[in-house]
Every structure is written in C-alpha cells, then in structure tokens.
Length: 117
Ligand SMILES: CC(C)(COP(=O)(O)OP(=O)(O)OC[C@H]1O[C@@H](n2cnc3c(N)ncnc32)[C@H](O)[C@@H]1OP(=O)(O)O)[C@@H](O)C(=O)NCCC(=O)NCCS
Image 1 (cartoon, rainbow, N blue to C red):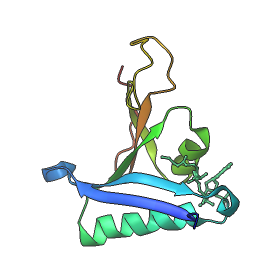
Image 2: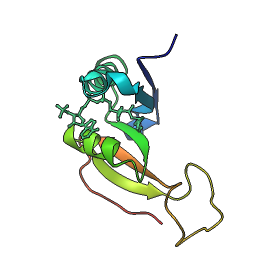
Image 3: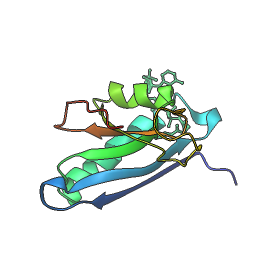
Image 4: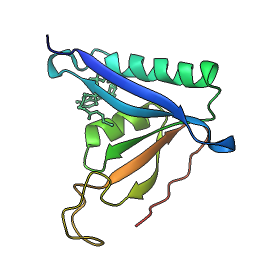
C-alpha cells in the first residue's frame, strides 16, 4: 500500500544544543495541501518540546526546494546556514552548482541567517 505521509524525527545534540531534528517529512502528492505537513511538524515540535525538552527544532532541506523552504518559513522557521554538497557531490566543489547543497532550517529562538560556504 502506498504511503500517505512519512515523518521521522529524533532528539540530538548536547547541552544548549539539545534539540529536535526532522529527519524526513514527505506527503504523497494526492494528499498535499490538506495541512498534513503542518500537523506533523506541530506534533514533532510538541514531542521535542514537552517530552525531550529540546531548545529548538532543525532540519536540512535541499536549497532548491522552494516549496518546503517557504512552508517552513511560513511556520516561523529561518534559514540558518548552508551546507555544501550535503546531498552528495556533483564534482564541482566550491563555486559550483548548488543542487546538492542543503540549508539548515531552524525554528524556535534562533532568528539569524548565516551562509556557510
Ligand atoms: C513539502 C510538503 C511536505 C508539504 O506537505 P503538505 O501536507 O502539502 O503541506 P501543508 O498542506 O501542511 O501546507 C502547509 C503550508 O505550506 C505551504 N505550502 C505547502 N505546499 C505548497 C505549495 N505547493 N505551494 C505553495 N505553498 C505551499 C502553504 O503555506 C501551506 O499552507 P496553506 O495550505 O494553508 O496555504 C510536500 O509538498 C512534500 O512532501 N514534498 C516533497 C518532499 C519534501 O520536499 N519534503 C520536505 C523536505 S525537507
């Protein structure tokens, strides 16, 4: 049976960096724009906050994934830094194409944006 949505998260980090991390979030195309991703993010934030006492929630997102980036920003998240070739190397290195780069997106309490090459 095909999936409707998948969400995977965990708690990680040490000391003041202890936080919830969204490992994967995907909704099947025919079930999108129904608020499922928003509900799943709210659930992950609640678990991170109330169960694990995390200080914030973060995740990686492909730099070209404008739909997801806009969605997270609409939920109050901010781009924190850029990780070169997080999704693999295209062999171009610094200054090359950015399809394989990721943004670290952070919610709760961290509002600055830092670009890291
Ligand atoms: C990104 C994704 C998870 C969104 O799931 P979803 O269940 O459709 O999202 P929601 O219905 O909860 O939408 C929440 C808000 O995000 C924004 N949004 C979501 N999809 C959008 C789209 N295609 N275009 C514009 N805005 C969009 C809207 O602001 C929306 O709120 P609204 O419907 O009240 O306007 C889904 O498109 C997906 O699975 N994409 C492929 C996998 C992926 O990119 N995952 C994220 C990787 S980090």
